[in-house]
Length: 592
DNA sequence: GCCGTTTTCGGCCCGACTGTTTTCAGTCG
Image 1 (spheres, rainbow, N blue to C red):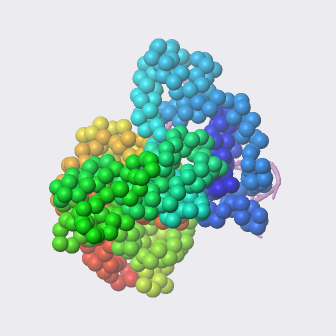
Image 2: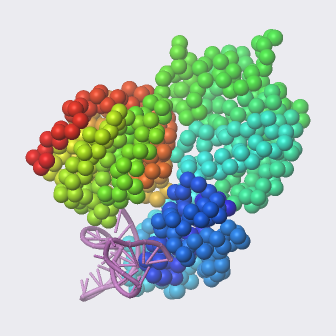
Image 3: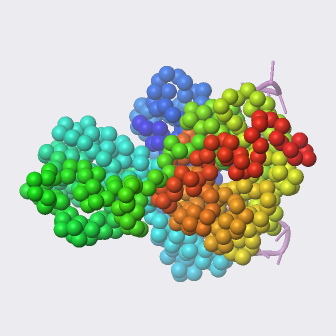
C-alpha cells in the first residue's frame, strides 16, 4: 500500500469523525498523522516492518496499529464502520466554504441533506434560510460555493497527477512488448490543474498493453477501448488514457497527445504551408506509420518529436510552452530562447522554520538547500500578528537573527539570509516597524487576513507595502488557493505597475496549490520590467523540492534566467537587495 | 489521538470575522 493511500485513509477518518463531532484534538492527531505519512520519503510499509515508523512524530501506539491493519488487510475497520454509517456526499457538503462539521450535521438532521445536489435543491427551494442560525445570505453563499465546486469538479492538482502518471507509466513500461512510454497531455505541459492523465507508448502490438492497463489493480473501470487506445477510471477517480503507437508513429502520437489542441492546430497549419501533412493517427490497422510528415523523398520518417519540429524548421518547443500563444514564432529563430531551468536556481528566498509554523529547524532547511546545490536561503518566518502560525515577536525575531549570524560564521560557500514574511495588516501597514525591517536581508510582505475586502482596499494595502522602502518581495501576490479559494480582489495591473516603479520583486510561489503569480501575470510583470523570484514558501524539507512547479510557471510565462533574481550569485543578489556582502555585522537596525 | 527532564494526566489553537442574533455559534486562517 502506498503512503498516499494510507495518508488518505486517515484524512477521511478525520473528516468523518469531525462530522460526528468527535474530540477536536483526536481529529487533529489523525490529520497530523496523515500529513506526517504523506511527508515521508520512504515507503510506510517498509518503515513499519523495520520498526522505524513508531519514531515518526505524530504516530503513536493507536495510529501505528491502524497502519498495521491497513498494511495487513488493506482496510481499516473503524473507517469502514464510519463509511457505512454516513453517506459519502456529506463530506462534500462539509467541505463547502462556510460550512463546517456543525452546519453539515445540522443540515443533515434538519433537512436530511446527504449530498451537494440535495443541498442545492434545498437552497433553491429556500428551505435553508428557514433554519435557526441561517439566513438569506448563508443560503446564497451556499449556492455560490456549490457553483464554484462544480466548476472545478474533476480537476486535480499537478503533484497528484504526476504521481498517478508516474505510477501507471512505470507499470506499462514493464509490460512485455513495450518499447517506451511517456507522459503526455496537460501533465507533460505542467498545467496548473488537469482533468486526466494521458500516456503514449510505443509497441508493435498494442493489445498486451491495453489488456494490462485494463487489468491494472488500481483501475476501477474501463471507460472506452479502441484498437490502440484505452481510457480507464482509476482508483483515484482520475481518468487515464493510454495510446499505443507503432514504433514509426511514436513521435507524432506523443506530439499530438501532448497538445495543446491549439499548438497542434498551429503545427498542422505550418506543416500545410510547407507542403507537409501532419495527420491524425487514427485507430485501426494500417494506420501506424502513416502518421506522416512524408514528402521529403528518401528521407526517413521522423521518429521523435524533435525530428518533427526540425522538419518544420523549428527548434523543439518545450512542452510547457505548447499553448498556441506564439511559441512557434519564438522557436523559429536562429537560436532557441534560453528559458529558466531548475538548475539555474541558486537559492530560495521564502522559507519557514520551526521558529514559526515550519516543521524543521533552520539547520535542517539549510542542509536540504545545500543538498539542492543552492548557495543561499532566506529564513522568512511569519510576523507577530499571525498568531495561528506562531508568528515571531520582535524579541524572538531578533534572537533568530542573532542565531543566523552565528550560524553564518561557520558556513562556508553558503549564506543564510535573515528575513521575515511580514504580514500586510488588515488596515494597511506592516506588522514590523521600518527600523526592524531595515536590518534584514529579505523582507517578504504578504497578505494573510481580510481576504474579503473590496478591490480598492486590498489593492491599497498591497500598494502601501510596495511603497515601503524596506520591502523586497511581495509574497503569493493574489492569495489564491487552487480549487479552494479564489484570488482576493486585487488590481494586479496597478500592483505590477507600482512594483516596476519601486523596483520591487514579485514572487512566483511554487507551492502547487498556489502557483501565484500565475503564468499570465508573471509574463505581464516581466514585460512591464518587474523582476520575479521563484520561491517555495517551504514549511518542511520536502516542500523545498517543489521548486520545479514554480520554475514551470516561469517557463510557461516565457521567463529567462535573467528575469528571475534567485538565479543570481550571492554577491549580485546582495547588491540588488542593497546589502553588503561581508558575513555578520550587517544587521544594522536600531535593535541589533 | 499524541506527547512528556514542567507531566503517564492534562495540555494541545487562538483571535477575528460573519451572519445571525440581541449575546453568540460557527468558521477560518
